[in-house]
Amino acid sequence: MRTFLPILLVILVAAVSVSAWIVYSTTRPPSAKYLITPQSFPSGPIAKASDVTWSNHDGTQARGWLIKGDEGAPAVILLHRYGADRSWLLNMAVKLNESTGFNVLWPDLRGHGQQPPVKWTLFGAIEGDDVTAAIDYLHTLKTVAGKPQTGFVGVYGVELGAYAALDGAKRYAEVRALALDSVPASPDQMMQAATDRQIGMNNPVFHWLAVWGMKVYGAGKYQNISACELARATRNEKVLLLTGTTNDPWREPTLALSACFTGGAVDVKKDLPITGGSLDAATGEQEEAYDRPIIEFFKSSEEPLELLINNKPIAVGETVKVGENFGLRITQVGDVRAVIEAMSGRKS
Image 1 (cartoon, helix red, strand yellow):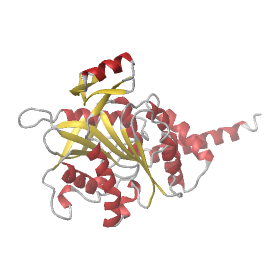
Image 2: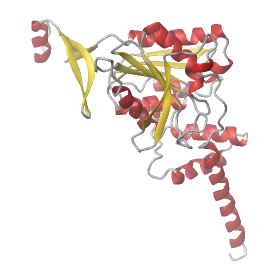
Image 3: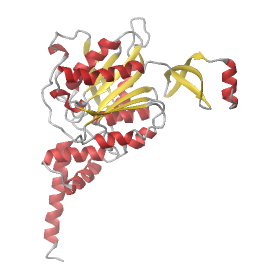
């Protein structure tokens, strides 16, 4: 036993060192110069776009670009994939604002962008709470008359951004629409994919070292909640799922997610030649073909929500936040007789 003890110690030290290296390098994805900024936009600077900052709920700082829309219009938050940054979604943000008049906010996720204020990511384990902090920030925006600048909220996300969007919708009921592209099954799956890219191979031993190293590194914060579990906890959101062709690594978990939503309507678009993760390589025509259905999806989500009793609509309204609670502001009540019948459970 004494003969093997030094060998075991060497193996243990090597395993810990490799685990620490994987965790450190993958939680700090390489940053690059922004592909494009509002000031360097091809058709000229975007005067309405502003660089804004706000506080996350854990006290760290967040930043993003904001284009204000019409007063009281809905707001859409756009979230990039792992290894990208907010500049990847600038074109979509501009098109969305110009086509709908919506307010659009798109941040750098933790550990992403040029000189990020938070240097690390937890692969979605905490980014969902950051989405709710962004929503809280949107609620602080006021018109000149002092009225709320934003209405209901929709969220678009790719991969890491898609998981964060889903987690944010679970936390905040006022999220009415979700457009999710290439959704990972869990933070562990994202961590494993990042590990494969870092070491250049798909190896279960390195996966195990990465996951356990992350559990130690993110103690108390890193929770491997499945995307399906988050979807089951959402309420009555409209959902659009997008995924690529059969060689897309996120195709299967994205398609499987469609069965996990128990509330609102789910639309699935698969076999897309371009997904949100490859927009940087898309031609103008391909990018337009990808963006247009997403923009139309958010436009259609502006329709009022129905209040159901015994599966019968009795009124319509809009989601509101009062303190820490959410409710439905009734804007129109149905026929009185139909309401009474719905409450009593009788059929007309």
